[in-house]
Image (tube, rainbow, N blue to C red; front, side):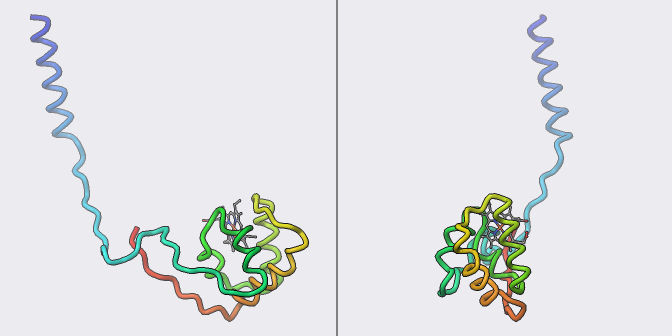
Length: 118
Ligand code: HEC
């Protein structure tokens, strides 16, 4: 009898849990869009590219660099901040890297983000 009672209790609990479970919303997105996290941009050629690839792409994609519109002073600050955050950069390569970033991703940069699905 004890066993039957606990079976009944289990059934009641399960039935209650099933009926009160929130209805799952279906995700709606355009499946033709690329997934968030897809890498779209590679770095342009030029002196400083190798340093940028070695020092700047461990933690984020090249898109994070390519979407900026910073002048040399702002890039210097950005690079120094990234070094404080853990980027490994040879001090002797810093000036070349900053010049490369300012040349390619300066205030005139025409970056257009690509739509993604979440
Ligand atoms: C140790 C990891 C790491 C490395 C290496 C790194 N970054 Fe970052 N970076 C980050 C994080 C974390 C963010 C913030 C990302 C976010 O907000 O989604 C970021 C964001 C940025 C941004 C966006 C603006 C901002 O300040 O948040 C720029 C520009 C940037 N990084 C440039 C660089 C450059 C240039 C290098 C190479 C010298 C570099 N990063 C290397 C971690 C890193």
